[in-house]
Image (tube, rainbow, N blue to C red):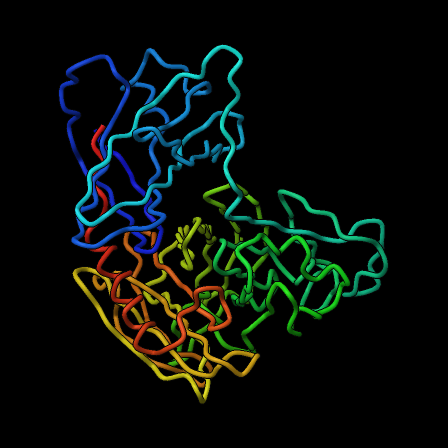
Length: 413
């Protein structure tokens, strides 16, 4: 059988492996998860296929089970990725000591027992105005309403005042992000001073007051004409071209969960030179993680995709690698608060063509395989609780990230 694991925590991982289930010594519904690193993993999240679980534990009704490890409940969520009311995957969150193996049990709920609840540690949202009207390219009056899906109207562009903070947002308990759902299509950072979910309160006045310091934090990045942090582009004529010219856009909040949140954006008819391609962009974030995972699917081949980080005079460029993964990062007093901010994109070495730069961005050029590409991006702001405050600590963190990606958890059903 083939199982796919999505692991993002202090050391985020993604892997797939082929394995045959060991013969069960009893009828207990359980499996093991092993940390393969000689280092602890905190908030390591793995995702299991629901159909595989049902096949393995056919006697169970998966809609009426909880997960435990020892005497402790394991935080989890059922993910209805297709919107049909049926869970396709289950996301579970565990902590590990170095080289630790844990057994996870599937336990049927007792008579009258309710499904356990867990603190909400991630969020994804998109909100636009209703009950107003368009005057040219501006939306006048109205109030914001959160929705799960948006077909972007043709009138919408930058500073239309239609979408709250100009695009979808997603956050963990450590950091938040947004991207501009218009021709700019660049990613921005919300630095957080609290582990609480904050995006629901950002930009309600319809303006960009979130650039000013507040109790929850602030927008800490000036994006301008750059890739911001981790935005998708293509490398054309020695510069990064963002996903600017498209036929239409749609955006869907796929998951808004306690341990995992996910946004899918469809770009129809991205024009790159003489080539047009549709792009499916899936952004996901996990509890306890600063990283956003970006999965990209193309309808037509583009050989020179790219991503990167906005250039800043105070941003020192840092690079590193371990195993099959590498990072391109910057560190320095480059936040809008004029204090320290670290930013990084993390990518498979096998996908990389070159690291380079243009006028606005530090860039890594990447080759998709079979019309698909996966990479990560992240930010660390010095005003976070338990913040990374030095270049040395930031490099140590990044080295841990790529080490973890190269040594995934071992999940055995």
